[in-house]
Image (cartoon, rainbow, N blue to C red; front, side, top):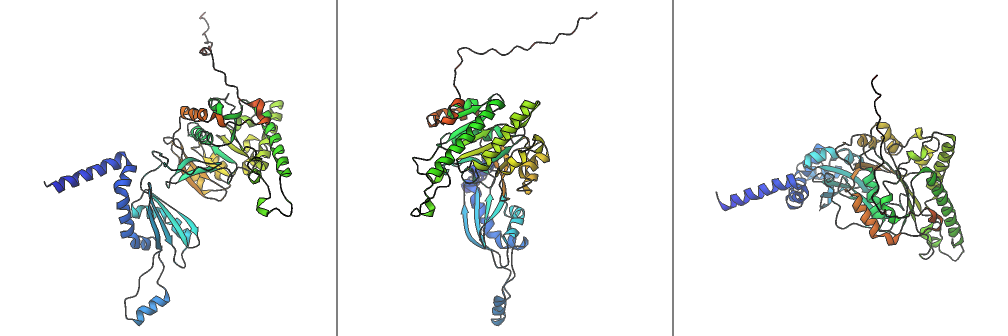
Length: 454
């Protein structure tokens, strides 16, 4: 056996081991080259087999007859750009006359098999130009966020998309969002990662956690206000309404609508105000919305109506005042009472982790992206953290949040505790951090004794 043969066997063994144990390393070392060759060699035949070609134009047929040459074959979309990435390939195609971007989108699954890729998605960049994003391996199996991430004010990375791109939560574009998920679906990790990313921003965090605060109170050093029961939540939401009205008065005062002020400088929300006058934006996180909507007595019903009305007002009017909602829950349907569907209609961003039934998925996507309902109910219980996200445009994608432990989130909040702003309207709801002097004993549970035998 020659040295060349031994070296070739070692390279092949290394490639197989990497593909099995480290698919990302395999892609960067071997996979990307093989994938580029497959795409370039098979491109014309694959496009023809998928029905993505057009007949030659009349002038080309006439030219072939005039010059006594063979008739030209069908033409595939032009490859305008082919760029390797850390997770796959990005191919930009120029469509031929008569072709449609929908035809390319409908053929994505066939393109995936033909080119030997793990996944293929398409999107239209502009008229006549379509971008194919191909992934070489399952990027959601082990989520590794890129080293370089674009972090801008009120825009934070929260997950990785199935096409290898970073999924951002942009509050200025999508001010309010709804996150659904069953128990152990990864919903809490998604919220935890969101808080950890927002901790480094100049933003006030307000939390409502009716599970006695077990989810959000460990992160209290970075929160400007916290409520752990429905009664406190109702008062806190009323305080946010007062804050919103005060901010609107500030905007009216500084609106600058005189004739000598350019149109672009007229203030209509807090982001049009000068930096020294701009109030701090507020993100309100509701951990379990059903706990705010359920009631058993008349007094609790009045409290419930007060809470839902306040949330609906914040969803309708809060954006310009810099108040944004993140509402989480296991279900969010009309069975929670009046006003719930009106509130849901104001929540533009939708994210659904694994749900227990199809109606729960319909609550998230039935009114904006019906195609995403089937994808949401197919999420396996063995893959916590995987979710389907969509918005009012009808587009959707599968995402997965990197696993963030509670300790990591606590460390992030403690590290940026100095950024916690003091909001006067919420001062009475600022969490008080008290360290216990001694371990707290577990509550004793009285055991039921069987009656003595006669």
